Amino acid sequence: MIDIHQHRQQIDEAVTFLRSRITSPPEIIIILGTGLSSLAESLTETLSLPYQDIPNFPVSTVTSHEGNLVFGNLQGRPVAILQGRVHCYEGYSAREVALPVRVLSMLGADTVIVTNASGGLNKSFLPGTIMILTDHINLLGDNPLRGPNVDEWGPRFPDLSKPYDDRLVQTALQSAQHLALDRIVTGTYVCIPGPSLETPAETRYLRDSGGDAVGMSSIPEILVAIHAGMRVLGLSVVANVNDPDDLQPILLDDIVATARETEPVLQGLVSEIIVRC
Image (cartoon, rainbow, N blue to C red; front, side, top):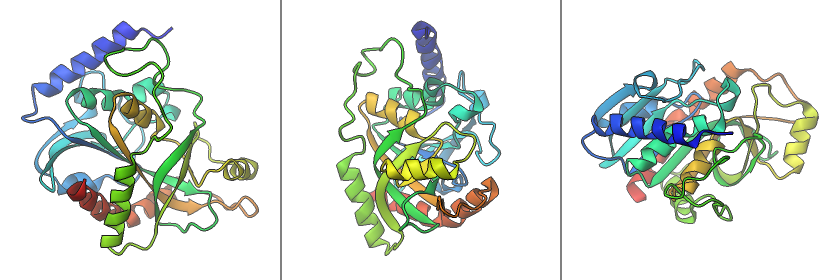
């Protein structure tokens, strides 16, 4: 049974710690995924805190995730950037994975922009495509909202009929058009536990289930953000495209490399979205 009293105490300790160090609350949370850490370098008036220095924050064990919480201004807006994330496959529960978003929501943030790197399932996608999430399929086998509900945090049964904010999706599409980006699509993201990558049969199953891209992250944070009443936008960099009839070896180094090649495009897109949202 989940000890909700202990979890609340952990959240409160982290909130108290961060309130004592920031000068103004963030409006927007930006979560940076695999190979997508350098957006934090665009901030002004920054305060960077390693995750291990923040009470009860989970610490990433993946080398491509920096592991810093960075406060600052982006395009004149106060933001908090999670420079790297943790995953369930590292041994964390979904509740632990989503703890930073819960903490930041209690500091006053009302919008979350989640980024990640994924494998393409849709045959029409190309490596380097940015997919704007319009729906998702959670196959993690865990949910950060399991256990007793804290009513002041959100409803027992949050509505997911529109998990991704329509206005933010339209803002992202308009921003991409303004920047003349040509590899921008919308689609459904599938989250699997990992860390093993998909077999040909699994890839075929996920595609037939309606998935356009597959990854191992983001859904715990998204569910907590929705529970907290926040607006959510998801952006996934499609690092490779999986063909179940001719599946090639997939290496993490290749995924990270493609994500980093696409990073400048994603940075420009996020910055334009910040201006418009």
